[in-house]
Length: 248
Length: 166
Image 1 (cartoon, helix red, strand yellow):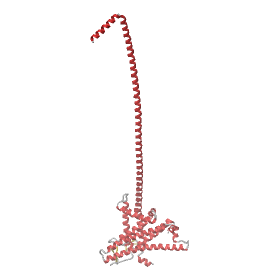
Image 2: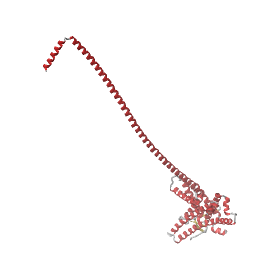
Image 3: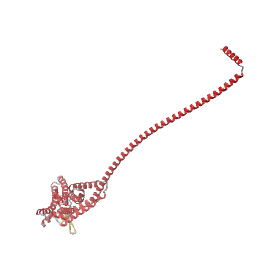
């Protein structure tokens, strides 16, 4: 019987901390990326092999894209870790969630049975945590780049009533960003999982295949959007307010 | 609100663990991927730029060496031409000098020969004069010693003999 649960299911507990199936897959993603990273680090050389080539293409591509937004390679390299890590974490989480078997390994618990693994982005805790981190870091980078006082003045400006009102809107938009970040990713991935589950239930053979491809694409696009939006918000935050106004 | 949060499955503990997951991944990627790969890319870029600069420098130097070589060859050609001209001129001078020397020696030789011939001629003339004087003297002596009639007869007889022989 198909069970659709909005919240990730607990698999076990460590101390007082529950470990859900989404959390478990996020840890698997972490381990996988760590193994790939260490392997890459140990094989780095001036003449690259295939793994290093892929890594260099990804890094150069990301830097090129960031250059076009931030305007300088130095700035791009400064903010690359946060942007690319978000992208890679979301991408691998989405794609690993689509690997056949991930949602079909069932563990029996008390009154029911739950899948052992679940796509991390189909759990709000994952998307909300990423959104909070992204928005927090955007403001930290902004404060570091233009100064804490100027960054705070974006939200609390008592220069004039209009500026004060704009500041309140900016503050609200920060929360709106968190919510949009969270629910965009969650909605897309959760809907994709539900869609795949229903298709697999209705017509188990071949028919789910195009939807699998669609979800692979959606997984990439959502990771890309999350990363790009973070990048754009960083670019806006690190630009001085006067310069940004002059730019408009 | 609390019910909504609970319905959505939002739990601060899960939130924290996902944040920790992300932080760990960020650290791992920063240490093992971003830093070393970016450093490698910078090193490679510097190496390529250095290589290109060196290649450009080498090409420039090669061009300079080529120009120097061409200049040297041109100088050598000029020098060779100069040497040839000088040699030709020296040879002409030497030839003229040798010719003049030869002419001088020839003139000297001719002069010496002429002097020697004149001396010999003078000596011959003197010897001839001396001999002629002696012969005249001897003839006078004999003439004085002989009777004139006898001489006349003898001369007549000789003339007759010679006429008869013819």
